Image 1: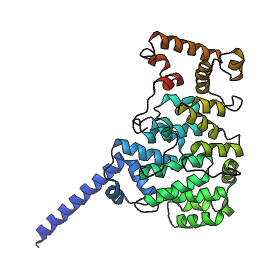
Image 2: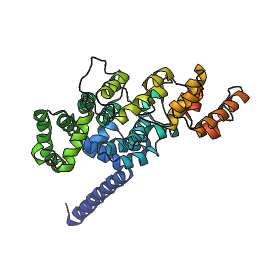
Image 3: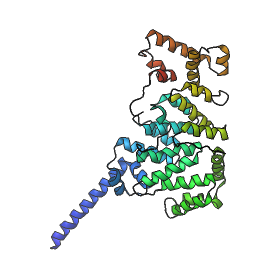
Image 4: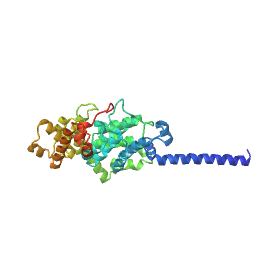
Length: 354
């Protein structure tokens, strides 16, 4: 090969490498969460693209929700949920981010709600690996470690690399909260070998806990059930009652229970679970007014007991008047009442998937 030819080959090779590098950089800029989610699953970018294909805008947002939730960056989760396009994952993380700020009920009707599946992602034969990997986040937040641990194990099992810091971190912390330090140490030792996870793991070694982390563990342990009952993994209401029977001050569990009742339009269960002295929201007032009107219980005593404000009662009367005027069609109710529980109760319809 002549020197001139050799120079041409090297220049061509450099151009190819430069173009490949520019292409990968452009990909990372356009899909940063795809790369971050791949890293949380122990995959290189090339391995992730081979396993999951090329992402699009919707999958990028979904992966962003999962990434930021794993890091407990709830402000970022809320911002990403605003970009979602009516998916169960988007609603699930929208609700969870609001719950972490004590606003689950207050903001429930402001967003697309696919009935109960917006609160708890089902884990079963028809569930995607991605949803299974996300399903435990709400249980960890609520304080029910068996399901948080189960979903982390399943997520790791279904991950292409069968590992990943997202799952190892959750497995370590669920066992730290539960007090099984031997199991937690196993996962922490694995994380110590990762440059990206070493600092996180060192801070969670029991003899290295900072006062702030010790407080975090104490708060999580306060949520743990003191006893459990035999139940199926899909008996969500039973599990929430188990949490509340052990810790009635677990307001997040109470709001999830009440919102679960309301999204399923089970007002009898809602009234059974609802104690206005423990939690309150305009959403709950609106639901109670439907129940009281149906049962002939619209008395001053009941309105006071359930702490229904005059403003909510007045709005309900306007809704009823509009409902009767339009023979229940609802065509003129969307503007003022589209984000009310009354509108959801009368007009939200399940589709085949929900």
